[in-house]
Image (cartoon, rainbow, N blue to C red; front, top):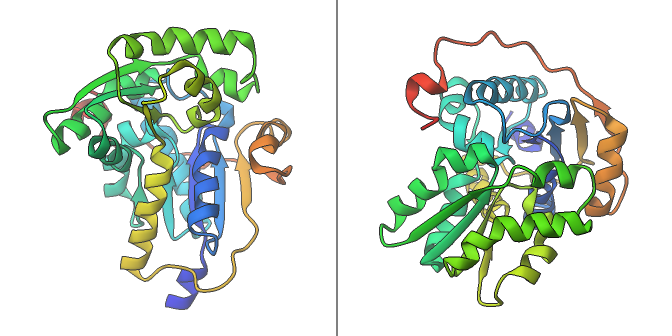
Length: 282
């Protein structure tokens, strides 16, 4: 039974192609693990959604992944991690890991003046700031909501001059604060790294929480005795929107055109517990 459990896939989800940065880290750090990747492309971007909507989406996606017998779930979405992680951990009997704490710990370990670029929902949650100040009360943290980044990346407009101008506008307040560390508070944003590096000083450290989330996942698999001992199966991809569009956009980051299935998520009846009632959205 334990051997069978080890062979099960790790479930990874995001609103779209941003989570491919987590997938690439899984390939690099845990090449023996099999993956089921879900992109909620029909409802992206998440960053402008309400807290209640995010919680409902996350519940539906995790239920879909659990139905497919994944052994662990990685939230490859900062907005979901910031707003829903604690609640869904209490609702599902499966290890669920998020991006905020691993990313915050990595940033607080090397930086003193830290900038976080994130979706508006993640920035408004103050999740990164709270986590970093808990780890080191002496750090200074500035957060910038970046509503246009995810749509531009999903539209494959990374090298559009307009994207460069948008990035310069978002980063300018952080440049003025002379940050020494920049945290990608959305898994989409590492796709923009060439632009970020061209706009920021060479002395700025870049933190990709995806790297540290996968490190945490590796540790959890070892502790639980769930690491796969055999060869990985081909990654399965599923989306709620257009499989063709996802496949076309993801080609440049995966190096191949994936086979993508269209998925129908289960309808989850919302419980009486809400993000607002727990204060998780503050």
